[in-house]
Image (cartoon, rainbow, N blue to C red; front, side):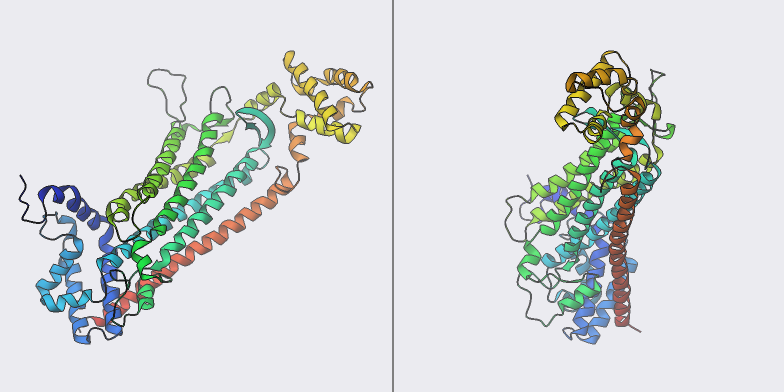
Length: 495
């Protein structure tokens, strides 16, 4: 039986406090260090602590950083957590009263959420950087494949000709919206909770804006209760992550379908193919499977974090803190693997023109343009034209001929429907059912023809550049704040 008179109980130590201490060593020591230094600078600048006290605390904090071998430490239960370990180190060097001055006008409540935001903004910035690189790779591949014909599918069946570039641009549009969503969620990490203390701020004349500046935030989070209770910075962020990888997973699923032997539209190079251990003919594009399950794992991990917040009290609670924050980092880890792998795989793939042509022939995918041409050139209603086109398609499929070989079948269908011979001659018919022509005449805004594709690619490039500039500005702001905080802390150091 455990000794219930001593804290911590060994089981509580091993199942909760120990793992959290290990997580603090790995993830939170840097932000805690930054907060301690910035808070001391603010206390000194506002006159809440004397210059002498600030100098003594600055020297002790510097000594702790130099002397404490954090990676080698194991959790013993002697201190409740990493925060109290640092405080005890200060006490050992300065005495309890002087050491305690550093904790004036703050709480672990506001510190915790500030730490979590600092860690999340670093991870989110890294993910945004990777997502922007993927967008750039997709745009470049779409430019390369602007005119490369593919079969576009709906409901799992061949539908119409398009181009690989046009397909990739659709994926780019969604990815850029997902990056914008993630960037907006990242904005919520730019509001600093420091100064909220436990719940209601403090009677000391603190400068919350100065703390925000020193820690690289844009401003303080205004409501002090919200600083320790609101978790929308978590739920909003993981919702944006969930959507990004849910959407990327749909593209990955198409890659899986397109590489199937029976479709064969997409060729995966040998560098991304694994062989069978027993079947020598097999070319297995296994990275696509890894992409699919890693994307799904990322979605699930993000959803787990969001779901943990459901029906929790609107106050400071562990439900949104160490354990949950740590679990969420796994979504960043698997998501990073997806972004890197997809960014390498897709540009390396190519379209198999022979299989595309065979599938187009077998499925009569250009027959929609035949119907459209009959409306424009013959003055038929679309319903009449659709009937003629459908009869033509059924006829060539029955004799296992491509649509371009079906002029005689078309003529008979036209005469049966209209009672007259078609004005469309064989050459005009051939053009109407040609896949390249199909694409070329679809030159409306957003279509696959060269002109709208060029305009779209220029637009995506500009949109990605704007998102990249927003991303770069954040990195510069944080770097500048870190340098300013270090300089201000250095000025407190003993001569």
